[in-house]
Length: 158
Image 1 (cartoon, rainbow, N blue to C red):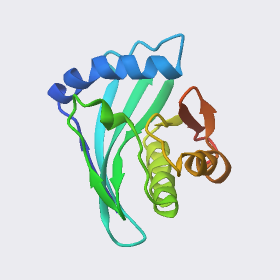
Image 2 (image 1 turned 90 degrees about the vertical axis):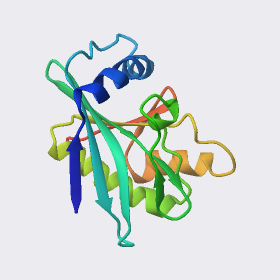
Image 3 (image 1 turned 180 degrees about the vertical axis):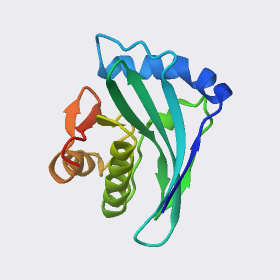
Image 4 (image 1 turned 135 degrees about the vertical axis):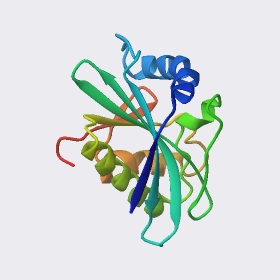
């Protein structure tokens, strides 16, 4: 079950400068994000029947819509949502490979259902002993393409 909340204008105003800076890293040509930014808070019900709340940002530029996910996972299924101004919002920090795979598959499907063409996950915080394994999971198991320090997935086949 997925519940969503569309962000307020204040949310978008607070997030837009950070979004522009962040998206510039994955698209050197740069997207003009104003004013087509939607921030949606989605709650995913996992296979373990635990509820996870995450924030998905839908960025639209002309006919291209990009879904950007920000979530920080701790332990087995707990989620900490960071402040709008916090850069940490934009990083996936998975602690369990299988659980994260379930969440990302659900998030990709949700983004596609909401019109996204691509789904992007930042790998900047993938560090430590699991970083290589997590990177391989994004590419080999989830079909993401590595790009800069991001993983991007086209959603046409999801």
